[in-house]
Image (cartoon, rainbow, N blue to C red):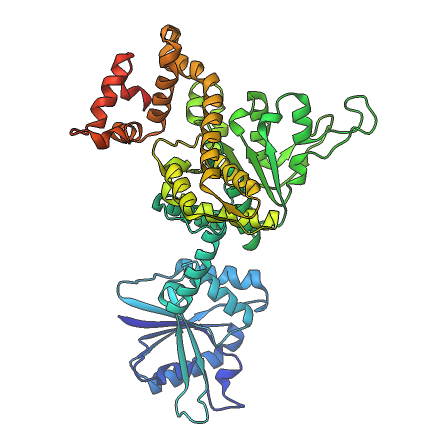
Amino acid sequence: MRNVIIGFLGTKLDMGRKRRWKPTPSLVTHDGFPVDRLELLYDNNHNRLAHSVKHEIEANSPETEVVLNRLDLDDPWDFEEVYSKLFDFARSYGFDEDRERYHIHLTTGTHVAQICWFLLAESRHIPAHLLQTGPPSADAGHAKLDIIDLDLRRYNALQHRFDLISQEYSDLLKGGIETCNEAYNSLISQIEHVAGATRAPILLLGETGTGKTRLAERIHTLKLDRRIIKGRMVHVNCATLNGSDGIAMLFGQRRGYTGQAGSERNGLLREADGGMLFLDEIDELGLREQAVILHAIETGRYYPLGADYEVTSQFQVIAGANRDLRRLAAEGQFRQDLLSRLTAWTFEIPPLRQRREDIEPNLIHELTRAEKELGVQYGFNLDARTRYLKFCRDPATLWPGNFRDFGASVRRMCVLAARGRITRSMVEDEIRRLRDLWSTSHSDGDARLLSKVMGRESAEIDLFDRAQLAQVVRICQSSASLSEAGRTLFAHSRERRKSTNDADRLRKYLAKYGLDWEQFR
């Protein structure tokens, strides 16, 4: 590979008046670094010096080709002029990376020129390393030459530091909880990278209680720390925005719009200016409200109610939903253009039942939170902890409210633990409480769920069978495969059977009611 150096003529240093060292001629004096070609940029005002330096280099290093490139600058300290002319030089230069290795000499030229060189090299408009030279030190007989590679991955110490910072941000997004689930950890790593690299909207999908709001708050903190945004996070519950009052709350309204004095308000969009807007439960937003908020997201402009002029507000958007927006769009309940705008980056947060290995770290986290808020140090008796973790990890424990149910469960036991010790009897009481709670909350929804899946035929199912079938349907809807659903449903009885074909058992049960696994996909 041929070494090629590109650099400015040193209008003062290369004269060598005050000192013998001349940066440009010294480039060809370094052993082990042959210079095959030197592209020297000069202003016509220094034409004589440029030719003098060319002759000096050719005399000292006959194998070096010196090419003079005239680059006239009206003001070498004007950033716009210097950058544009160097950019044009780079565009017209025929770089051949297969045969030549390029270097930019930073020592000569103004500070503005050095900045422009760096920007052009960093953006790969000039595929070159940076080259810094210096005069000989008192104890060394040769001039200094340092090559700077802008690929930071080559610097092990820097890369290690970047990895540590990235880990800190991942820990921030996980709330400081040492999670073990590989899928969730991978998801957090992706979110950390995307949140720090782009201003595009982020859509968080997941069941109720999976932690979408807390994750949005942590993404906001990450963006603040990286100085991507400056303002605060405005949390908007989209379920409350339907109707004129909701629109006024979001977009604001001008005084006199409703005919009442003192009714002017700025609106939530204005409060989010410079920060982040979290559109929680966006799947509950009406079609009319979807249309007006789409325009505000795309343009950063909107009309407050009663105003005849637009208001601007620049904000970044995170949306949360617990229903499938694509299905809602196909059914005409969600605008396709808004969906396309929000799904540039989509992340689906797994439910607690798919992260059972993370239950113990989250239990420690919830106990720590309770200690800080209640001022008491809490702990489980050994048999109580074993019993509670067994219940939490049991495939039959579905956690319909996810971490919201889990956190509330731990908090209840802490409040009831008068001396800070959670006993086996307290755990048993809490397990009964959770089962009663889930049974009550599901009973009203069983009929609606089966009606949606089976139609009118669900009305002919006995009440005795309805609860069981509804639970089976829920598990099928949340499982990745028929075998996984079977293992969850038959977790205990399968241990007593010689044949453990859970998928076949489940398939036969569904067929009894005219159902098939494929309809849940």
